[in-house]
Image (tube, rainbow over all chains, first blue to last red; front, side, top):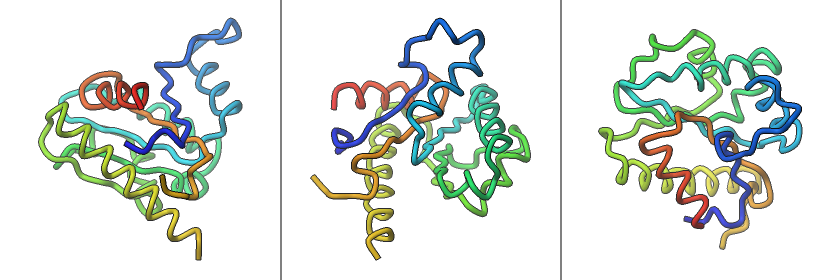
Length: 130
Length: 31
């Protein structure tokens, strides 16, 4: 998949620290320690997405929509109803790309996402070389 | 093996821990 060269942070895969009194402590600690250069987010229909929505709202408040937006890429099921989230999310759209996914299917969707991520990485690479 | 801007940088995935996201998590571990 080409991920080998990159460090991928997934919050659920990082152990809790004794200093993590709450989930926001863990999120803050991860951001401080790893300083991610790109946030890749996933929105699926028929699932509660309030955790991701909270994290994005948190990022928008800590930084600014303009500052954090260009570091965001959204993957969302086709026809995802953005009204189910908050206006913080749609405020990011002028800066962040939204990539629609085909119908919900675990295996094919993850392959599609993998291909897109590699495309994003390569296209970013091209624009930064200029 | 491409030399990209993000080669040595960190990407963070934000998503619900199931479905395609879970599959992607497995891929990042296997890769």
